[in-house]
Amino acid sequence: MASDSITLTEEEMARYSRQISIPEFGKAGQEKLKNARAAVAGAGGLGSAVAIYLAAAGIGYIKIIDDDVVELSNLNRQILYSESDIGRDKAHSAEKKLRVINPDIEIVGVNERITEKNAVGLLKDVDAVVDCLDNFETRYVINDAAIELGIPLFHGACMEMGGQVMTVMPKRTACLKCIFPNPPPHKKTPILGAVAGTIGTIQATEVIKFFVGMESLLTNKLLIYDSRFFSYDIIELERNEKCPSCGVI
Image (cartoon, rainbow, N blue to C red; front, side, top):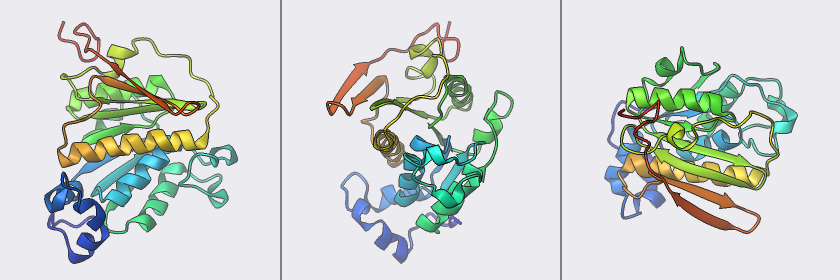
């Protein structure tokens, strides 16, 4: 469980020494991570990578939200799980694995489906939410909840051999509905496991940079990754002032 003290212990100084030595981090940056609270919405391919690296980085409180169970077909990309987890709920399986990775932080698994009725309640005790979901209907729900709560949303999605990442600062930068006003049809999509790991790792990096206080985030930007050609593109975005979720008109 996370300590009530923000000051780093000698053990924590040793554990995080390689990132503490990054000029933009330092001891003060690591203390910010220790005091940070994040929710990971979806504990699949993206969520596995995000949760592992947030836990390893020392985020003090991580809430994992998912109502699904582990299946054999998940194991090519959902690296938090193994065959022994098949049939078990992802949220608490992930919680158990993450506590092994870092026993000094607080991990809470929530085996619930995110809905319009419960989203704000699930997210009201965190400072950021990471979108690791597999459908836009629920993505819109957490997008709206993040806007209502005034917390940043770190979006990621992947399909086949590519993916995308963007960061939303409510009422300041483009939100999901600004950019994707109509949801694509929900269906099971093919995915290379390593691509989910790549996109999830980028999301985790964005979250860590945010909590430390670095300004070079993917706000008003959509990063597009294509592993077939190892290419990255960044599309400049604009907030839609008539957006039904974050607009001012």
